[in-house]
Image (cartoon, rainbow, N blue to C red; front, side, top):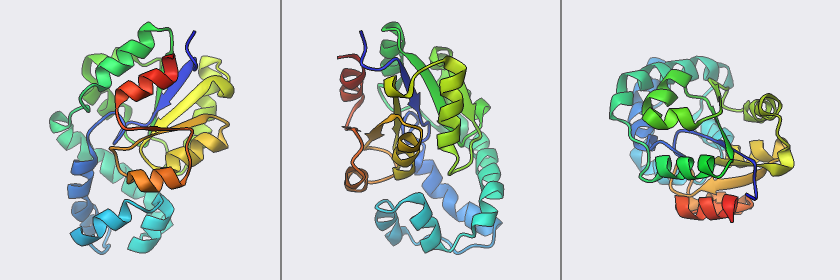
Length: 209
């Protein structure tokens, strides 16, 4: 019997190798909303910060976030044909699904974008909760649990950012963090998720062993 009956995944930086694209899209977004461009020398230090702290550091007004999220989804749609899944992501999803584990995706990205990048693996997902606000994931997690009739005690939330760990905890889930996405491994480790995953094999072992 698997250790978890449901795994809820973030998408960008967790299943999709889209962080490099987001880094290149920062200047375009900054120009669109009259914000200061990010100095490339700052990127590694930003990877140590939570989303709230990074936005504060960059001087991004919180009131602009909803509009910015919509804009980023729109320009992602222009580039999604060139954004791949991480190697092994589709096989990992297939292995979990074959073992009877339910799968969901909670993302601030648009569902059409997510499905396109997933390709055939999109059919492995039991529930999509996309277009969430940057800091609204905990509520989305709760909605997924209700929709799939799952217990938080038997659910693992997997993401690549500090905010994903925080949201999982708020919703009563175990938290797993992918170390090859946005936030640096040391930053994730400082927030003590139940699991740190350096590859998808370790994720499969945590869920299925």
